[in-house]
Length: 421
Image (cartoon, rainbow, N blue to C red):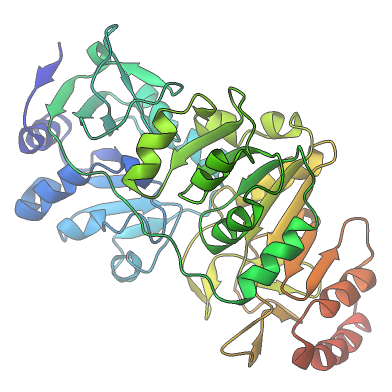
């Protein structure tokens, strides 16, 4: 029988029922139950002995769930700077999983409890997952104790997964602001990067993009230019201009996404637009789904590409600052899509041009994207299509889109490397 309690009572009930060592799923993106974090800040003992886990996006989900108590732990597939101190202290475990691997991990891991933020129930007693449909359905299915945060601030999109209110064990009814994120500030190089990406996009293509500067740049450049559809793990505020200017056709399902991350205006608009569908990771990232989409252009950013065509999307100065997320899933899906385009983008240099981000060998201790998964690489200096190329052709193509001041050194390094391959 469903019980309606306060957030503090829900946490106390969970501890009493499940005991120390209980695993607790906590959603990410705008679905993160920030109300429960607020309660734990005021009463840290409620977190003692708990293991929190989820998919928390760097720069979006800033809460350190393991940090509420010295005896709490956390597990995640992104290791952001916000989580670094607790990871160093041994309280956070990082799992190098992509999204299609993370969803079954969550379903298996969630044998204990799940805290899920939902919209108020409709006339049929079903609660929408709102603008955060990615992993919570899988967590709900596997949880033995299901806690709903019934939040009137969570919109109920016309087309989104929902859960029956009666299937929750505990319900917390409380209004609390959703997480919002400001738009990124673009470096000048990204205008040129966007134009080079646009050279690869045709009318009628379906686009996927990761969160951040590349998404902002490409969507800003697309306004009013082309008719495109969107199939992505997440969308943010720049998509509003495409909806308003007619760049996205007026067709049901023209936009399919797992989550929205941005402003309150974005959340309300997407919830009320019949073109938009929210779907779980089992659909948005599934290889079978992606392979069946004609002309899928997967557009994502990385931090470094080496002359063998391998990419680093997770490490800065040798330290883990992120994770692969859905990057590899979408690149592989675009490879299989008829006419698909697997695109990764990056600025050619860093530190005011002193450091090349196209390098002889990756500086990272692990490879984020294997060379077989890297298709098209874009910088502000051009496009390198590596598909079907030999390693020598790939290296020469990458050198051609490096910052000009670094090309001679890269060519010299490649000659030395090639002699040893």
